[in-house]
Image (tube, rainbow, N blue to C red; front, top):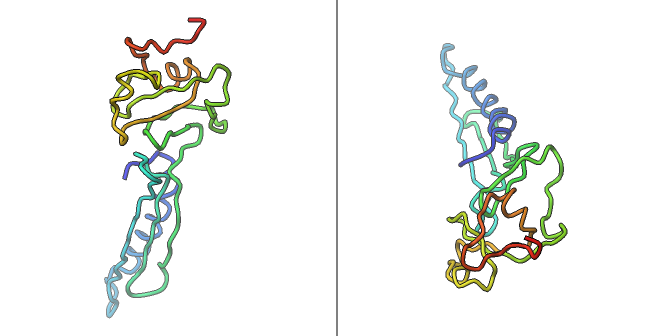
Length: 164
C-alpha cells in the first residue's frame, strides 16, 4: 500500500529489520538447525470510502519458535503534513495540528470531484453531475480551496467570495 516516508521508514522498517535479523540468525547454516520461516500479513485500514489508508495492521509469526509473534497497528502519517485521507491530497502544516477549514472565517459550502481539479457551488449543474463515489462536499474559505487544495474555481458557477 502507499504510505508516507515516516510510515515506511520509522514504523514498518523497524519490524522488517526485526524479522530480517531473526531470519539471518536462524538461516539453517548450523548443523541440525532448521531454517526459520516467518509468516507476515499486512492489512491496510481504510475508513469508509477513503482513498488513502489511515494505517495498517502488521502481523508476523515465526513457524519454528515464539521469538517472532506480534500484531501491531501502524498509522499512515507524516509529521508536519496534513493528509486528507478521503481524497489523498496533502499539505505541509509546519508540525501543527490539522486545521478544520469549516472553522475558518468566510467558510462556504463547496463541492469537488476526487478526479478533477475544479470546485463548484453545490447548486452548480456540474456539481450535480459528480458521482457519489468521487463527490467531496466541504465547507472552507475560497482561499483554502485555491491555496491549500490547489483547486480552481468553476467558470460556470463562479464560486468566488463576495469581496472578489
